[in-house]
Length: 143
Image (cartoon, rainbow, N blue to C red; front, side):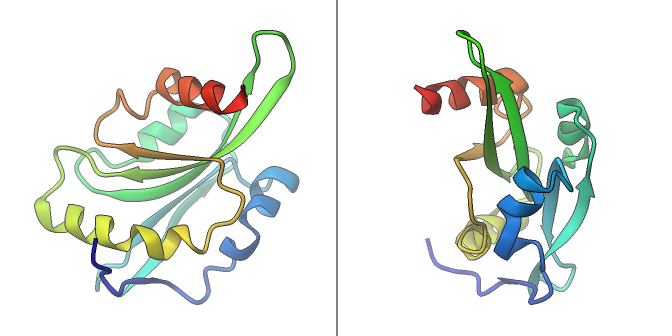
């Protein structure tokens, strides 16, 4: 897909050490990014320390696109806790066509700036972003 030339804002200080902020420092549980109103940059819209996956899902707008990173922690069936950094490309079916195209063509720009991502999730509805769906993906990568 062609690039939109929308780039992550230079002061996106979290991205070079994203895994450090999320996994090691536990500074945030999730970060939500959006394309700026002038459609020139990708900026941080929200950070949260909330450990509730439902809080993360409810922070995704129902009719607009976003990028997000979530520090997903889960238990393995045989015991032991695992942790995966998940990158979400949220493009709900209810979003307008122009934002969908902008986000799709801008994904590589932000994805290249994010280190330590273990799972990439393309989601267009709440089923695809559900805890169950993400857990299934995480379990497949843990084997």
